[in-house]
Image (cartoon, rainbow, N blue to C red; front, side, top):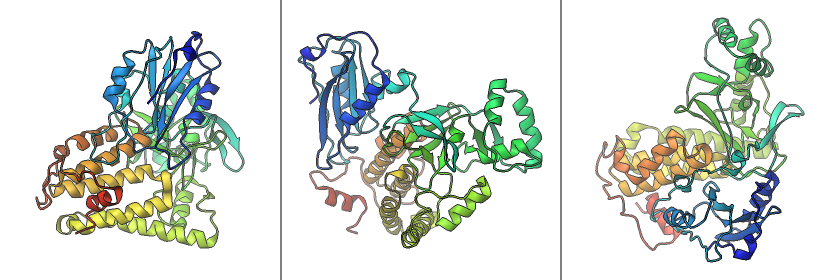
Length: 448
């Protein structure tokens, strides 16, 4: 239950809150006790703004309809969802003491699918509204320039959204150089200076190509087109990153989301590599970007690094097995079992840095299930993929919207019952009233 009493907002002013109050509020909202399902709070800042809401753990969802109805009773109120982990409401005028907002606690995947509060309120990021970036650009020892968190950043927060200075195909430098020269001439002087200020790990006859080769972010998975950015290209690499980059083809911009909680003063990192053991990652990064990776994973003590390499090699093997369409058709039980094994390894190796990997895995499990007619499990896997996509890409990502549609209507997928109907089930045929262990055994078909 969320509430704020009338005397807490009796002397509210119209001045906007300063940014450090949002940082303080984030601290107030955090749920540190793993046994605590949720944490209520109400808070009045130094400008007499009333902040009230509830923070809770990721798999607990909002009853968005009730939230929407309650917001109608709040004059000039704005709601800010905390990714998948809570809700802040800030009210600009006196709030009645009887005001309450009820949150629904979902205990398992069979509950009603979550709805984003963003569908009901116009503003979802208070820091963006205050025009204050979450990061600052700093010179970092051994890493050149990079982005560092100015405030504590919660998991799922959008750190940056940016249009590329230019995009370019992957081609030999001698062919790319004149193309880039022509594109640079079309940019404003300010953007030209931004491009030329970027680091070049490949100096020589083709300086523009060297800069592009050092700084690209792919315009989509497996795309041979890369974008170069004034700010996003400054984000350094880690094999265990705290942020994720994603290209949104609908608006032609790159987004950066926090996939872990990031502390004030901590460097923001993304992953440039395609995975695999450390020797493969480091040689690939050296060839592609011209640097030697010394991130926290690559710098592990030898015994720990060997264990990490073994996990990552097995992750690659399982990923290839899961993606085998012949095996998926003729032995779907084995494919689903590999998905579960892969999930366990990803959790061990990547922790919360694996949001994009988790989303891909759950989508694979969805495709295996729906191809054999199992709507119930497919809906659950689509929901979990959706939740991970929200964290690493945001609600406006085409991939996120796709997963949201599939969790509601799994039969919209083109492969519905394409292989067989041996697992045929209705969407709502999920076990009711069982504990999480029994639910997971049903989901992953551990009993078969």
